[in-house]
Image 1 (cartoon, rainbow, N blue to C red):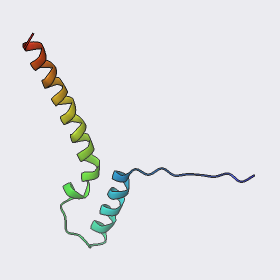
Image 2 (image 1 turned 90 degrees about the horizontal axis):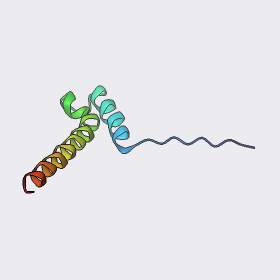
Image 3 (image 1 turned 90 degrees about the vertical axis):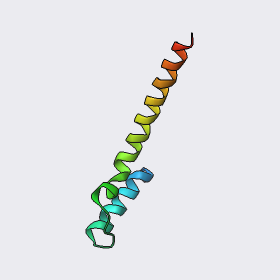
Image 4 (image 1 turned 135 degrees about the vertical axis):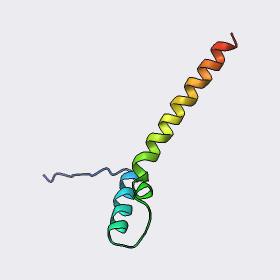
Amino acid sequence: MSKTHTVDISLPTLFLVLFVGLKLGGVIAWSWWWVLSPLWIPVAVVLLLIFLAGLLYVISEIGK
């Protein structure tokens, strides 16, 4: 029997590896903030959604 191994790589991880490689290879001259953006942009989106959900909750409670 042969064992099959699968590797699941998310799109942000793939972009992170690509951007870091391009930055270290001197192909792009982006700021490290943008090179590492696949790490912080998803976190920022989740935090924004949590904030908006909380804001909508507060607004709905005030209207009662």
